[in-house]
Length: 64
Image 1: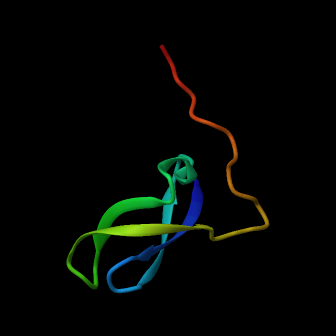
Image 2 (image 1 turned 120 degrees about the horizontal axis):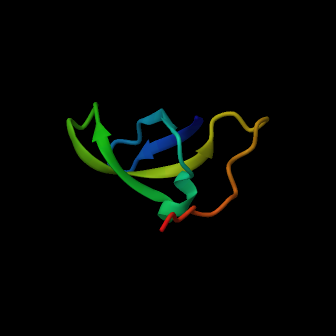
């Protein structure tokens, strides 16, 4: 699991989001529920929370 830092584009609240996949493949933006706005809002993907481990750089694995 990788911890990512996300920022709501409406209210500016930052949060940590744990994901088992590479969020950088989503083009820098992701729609999630914002607790402060109380609605689904666009969030900017700022990067990994723990830079010592490094962000995932591998592409998408496709299984046929």
